[in-house]
Amino acid sequence: MKKVELLSPAGNFEKLKIALSYGADAVYGGVSHFSLRIRSGKEFTYESFKDAIDYTHKKSKKIYVTINGFPFNNQIKMLGEHIEKIASFNPDALIVSTPGVVRLAKEIAPHIPLHLSTQANVLNYLDAEVFYEMGVERIIAAREVSLKDLIRIKEHLPKLELEIFVHGSMCFAYSGRCLISSLQSGRVPNRGSCANDCRFDYTLYAQNPDNGVLMKIEQDEGGTHVMNAKDMNMISHIDEILKSGVIDSLKIEGRTKSAYYAAITARSYRLAIDDFYENRFEPKRYEDELLTTKHRGFSDAYLFQRPHDRDDTQNLESAISDGTYEVSGLVLEDEEHFMCKYKIYPDIPIELIFPPNAKAKECESEIGKIYKNENGWFVEFKKIVTNEGKELQSVHSGYLKPIKLPATLPAFSILRQKIK
Image 1 (spheres, rainbow, N blue to C red):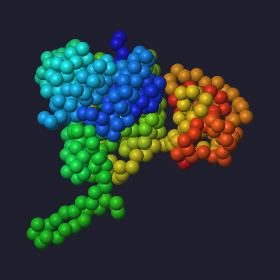
Image 2: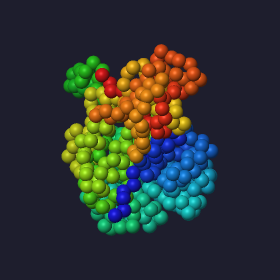
Image 3: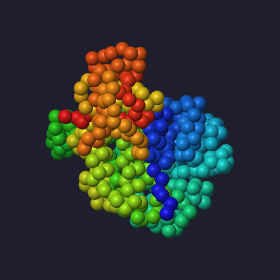
Image 4: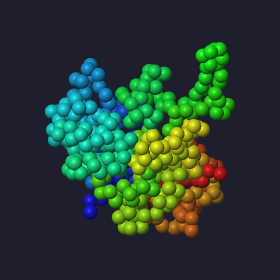
């Protein structure tokens, strides 16, 4: 049986390394040009992105490049040059959104596979067939499509790969076709610079046309988050999705999200996928771990129900993301130090999270101890010492010097503390 691919966001080089370490089979990202995530794209230069591609291939994994923006006429020459440059790095696929860009990419880089972005809104086998005949090898289905319709597409086009989103932010507009940010701040969503205006709090008014009375509508003193969608979370449905046999890749959204998010989502979905194939699928186990990430509430979106059948996909209370843990630190690649991300004091147990299959040993030194109990792995510092040997009373986020560990730990291990 061919295993489904787990595809994670690579907002920068560090997040790329973390996603791969925590179980992703492939990652996606790009430089800012023609990407729908300009903010994350600025994390990569051409040079560093080539290094990222080489790094990924050395891990025997895949990397797909986002060139999924919507170009205007005066950008087409630059777009062609960009495709040529990126193709010279030999990525595993280009992700594009429009028929014209599909054809352009086939002309410039016929050796690079093409994946069709979710922005193309493919919902049926007629549209899928058009793009397949143009040379697209994989379609990233619209979030509004149902699993039943994906089964129909696969029956009609068995050689076409299908990729679906299973986790991450949901857009208020249909498949991200939004103009709110463009109208309010001049930042164009379909060119990669969305300001997330749908997350803002708004004050609404109702006017009586007969007498001109204007009434303020309040949910609370802060107004209402009338357009704020809950995040997608499909992990409890992984068994149903994989049993269908038609999905080739499960995609996690979130190039602009944290390194912790990249790690925990990859780790949780990796575990769920592997457990399914080993006949030991346990949804609550994965759900509990995903609740440790910051989120806007969770919804299982539209894969099993049509949009008009749902009334629980919006979070009208708040756009503030909640999570049950605070990230305290991230272990560096030298495995001897970590960077502080929150605050750490001596004599406080701090939970450790490791990449899948990573090994650790219980030990104790003058710096502190690493140990395991019924609740997991922990580190407890007797003293906090920098890489230069300076002892601190405590360490907080923003401190830019590496801190010594009591003993070596796997690279990219996470130190976290439960929020009280």
